[in-house]
Length: 410
Image 1 (spheres, rainbow, N blue to C red):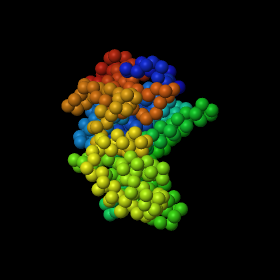
Image 2: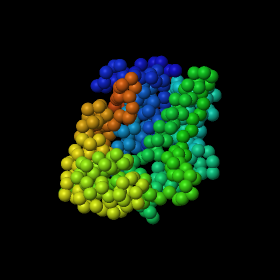
Image 3: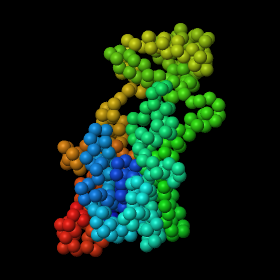
Image 4: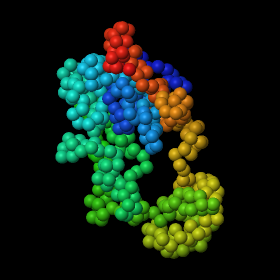
């Protein structure tokens, strides 16, 4: 493992936060979400992750609208070096950098990295211990020439069908395949690292959007295999529980309420004063209630329409029943649980109209030794670490200045 550039102290966190990948060097040629997610997983666990960008910057930095959060979300704990790979001198610098790496990660179109001698076949000749994580739209096969996006594979892989209402396929409300595809790439890297510690040899790891999506939909494929019935989209599914829905209540607010067992049903009726419903023989068991679901939901909706979401939430929480307020993403910044448990951390925005300002970002949803993995490095400015990293390759100040003057690096 690369052992220079010891990890910096965690920003605002205690020094005992585990960093199991400290000393590991990762060089990533990534953009958008999938590849950067893989690098972020490794970076959060302590690896030194070096993001190689074009001299005019990863275009993800300038995305607007729904893409404006991509770069600051998925590029924390990384260093940035800007290299013009189209210039032979830049490509050579990138190859030298990869020669110092334990892991190289990329998510560009098939054949792109080979043009610069940065594919696994080329790099592994001089670095046989290298682990090379490639993130594509499809694993090798009949579709691997196609251009894929998260939305493309959601549509062709059954997820949009299952998410939307019948006849209205709808993509999920986040970059689910990009994020999970990057996570599976990182899982593959971790497995390859263990194997390398045994054999001394690296390997190529491949992750793909389409295959990730098919894995997510696998439960519905097995549902069909088990029952012989076509799975209905989630909004029209055959619900196994009678009380399991979103209800509109006072002032138009909404709340999700559920009672998924007979014991919960009895508690639900007791809390809300539905003794008459609790006494009906036709509603005595969950399966009987499922048969009466349309009538039952209508009755519950009418009876709680005058009650506030906050009142219902309080009653459900005290009774230990499942419930959920309907929130928007921005509401989570004020979530008392996230604030109390350290689920949000400060990062400085590197780009855009709010560049330099500090905002909250989300951390990985697990702990190591009871600690959340935090932010050591803010999402980097373009080329923020170029001089440091080039000097580490043995280049002198004059050489670096000359390369900058010729737009080989930035």
